[in-house]
Amino acid sequence: MPVVYEWDAETVSTDGYEDVLDHSHRDTAIEALRDIDQIDKPNMRLVLVRDVWDKHEGLIDRTWAYVDDDKLPEKFADADGLEQSCVPKRYHSELRHAKDFLRLERKVAHGCTDASCGLCDA
Picture 1 (cartoon, rainbow, N blue to C red):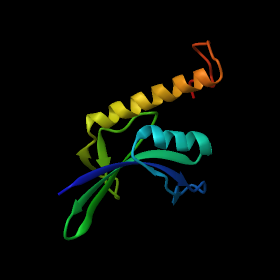
Picture 2 (cartoon, rainbow, N blue to C red):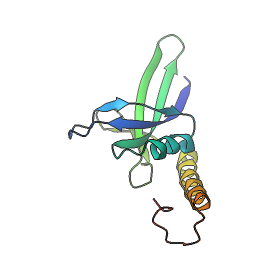
Picture 3 (cartoon, rainbow, N blue to C red):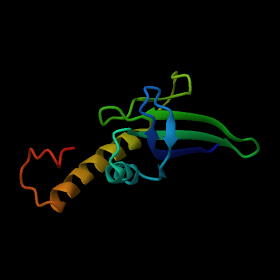
Picture 4 (cartoon, helix red, strand yellow):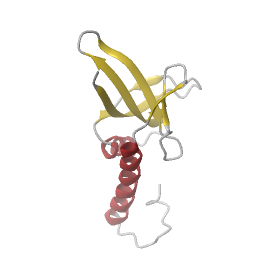
């Protein structure tokens, strides 16, 4: 059964329930992070989605790995919050590199030379 991974920049409600209001599905972490940066909403969050497909039944399983404190968890969680399969190491690395690249890109964009610039390290 094919497994498909996809990054998603979710917009969630601010009423305390965090209902998902909108999705911005992307192939790479950097694309999803750029969506979050460009929209600049505090109620957006980044998640890696794992889908398992069956050629006869279609989508048979979906789990999520929500980025917290700029890091992916070690395992995906199902809709009940129960841990499932491991997040592949390549996605941890992809997220780390995307964050570093965007930080460098921001420094170049505004000519920053200060290593502790608050704008660049956001």
